[in-house]
Length: 408
Image (tube, rainbow, N blue to C red; front, side, top):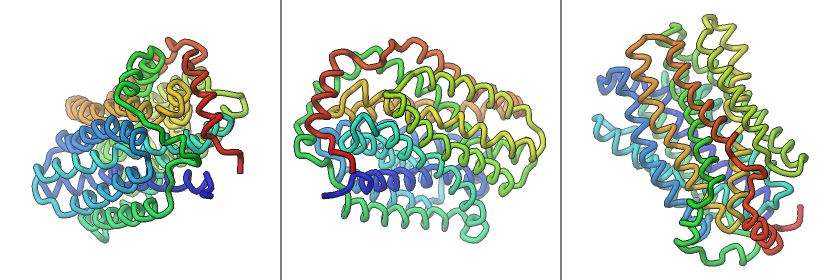
């Protein structure tokens, strides 16, 4: 029998590869801009193109993972992402770049929902926070790897070679997932799922509020991830390697915080909104502080702290969504909420670019970023406690009785 930790490792690997492919742009943007003769403000449109495809794919991929099962969908999405990433290394015009970035987003968008679906199927509620915490380290580790590895590679492979290398690695990951992944430990987890079940998600007030909160949180997190390096180069005159190292420290703080907060939530017996609100308000405060910093030493001290606050909320929000929707609808609920969350990522690159171009103010850019997690904290304050619908509590218990394996 396939071990549930192997399944978690595969979901984590797919998520990691997806994020590295996505975040490579944060370091490659300047080089691509020079090649295509693009001004600073227009670099954000490539990120927006990616997220247009990404948001659409979340909705489709989440429903499909509940409908047909996550294994085949995971391999297909990762394979498509690898091919599109490889192809991006050969673009010669802005139009080609926008089309390929949209295809990359369309393939990458299903990874989160599929991972949550696998976790909901293979882990019971006692261990789900821990599993989500481990799974979500892929995003922060992706920030570290991208900012440590990609800048030196750009000097040797140029941006074209970097994207071709990343595409090849992603294709290899797809083949590994196809060979080893399994849908669920029991056949009951693949019971039919229809469109009416999907539509029922949009009638849940708490789920809608969690979606709004995630939108604001992602605005801050991914706005920073995509713009921090470029802003430090342009406004603080750091070298690309120095700026990348600071952003890598940001990701390092997140790697530690995610599994720890997941374990803590499991020890407390459930997922609570108060820790998430605390994380988001702390995120606002540290973003505002970051915008006032001047020296490399200051940035290096504050960056890991910012990373803790910028990512610690994510496993708790993901687990809250699973508890609200139940195991059977885990993929669809994760896909639908993440689609809305990522709208923050779609909008924020262009907004921050316009703000910085208009003001040339490092601080103004970070004030813009801080508005997102502030909105997120306010949204969670309106979520009813406990954040599990009474009519779904019985469904969750039934799901667990049928589907969750004993601890290994």
